[in-house]
Length: 298
Image 1 (tube, rainbow, N blue to C red):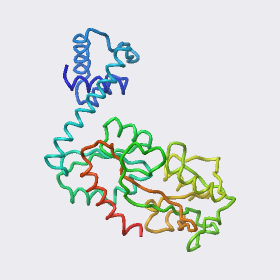
Image 2: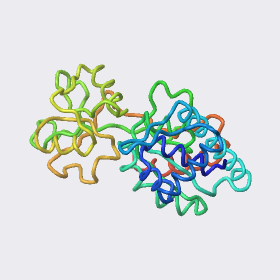
Image 3: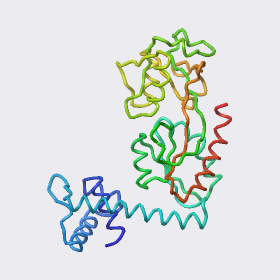
């Protein structure tokens, strides 16, 4: 038994497909299948039921995959310990972003981070909040950057920046030419929102409900770009994070206006596992990101 065999087992358990698992592990399908058969022989149990249509894990296979995932997580932590003491700002770092942050934050920071920390090798991933939290807990990711919500107290957190939300309206809308829009001006109106699973939805709803603003139930967006297109088509209004507002706030048939009294917004933070030995690295990254964001959001 070796660590590579455990990686094959975990990949197959997650993909439920030999070819996809082999591609993920950068080996041929016969190699992966053969190594797993050897693992079964060594353990003396059947881990996988092989059929022509699908891969089924036996109870023994499920238990083995669960333990293998824990072992691989601990191995990654061992590597991190060695790397941390050798040189904290070097080696691979796997960072997750939520979809309403990554595409709008990364263009402002990634080139600078690579130049500022030349010995770090960045691996970037985009997923919704609950997926990222699970991957962080399991050790697949080193840290994640997202909007903080209640229920994240089980992780360490470093604040990065406060991001206001602007109102996006069709260019023919009465608020399209206002310098700022008081939140109470929207009382009784309904805004377009993202679908369930996006943390921006929960944050926007919190401000809206408190101000007597409803949700337009006719449509739920899968991305900020979808919401933007719906607004441009005259199908409604929405709140957009400041970094997603284009340089020209009259672009693409949409007008973007700051909202005040109060200013709706969200806290963007870097989350990490409490016991991670890479905290000094996270501190350096967070400080640099905060510095880069300050002039953009003032």
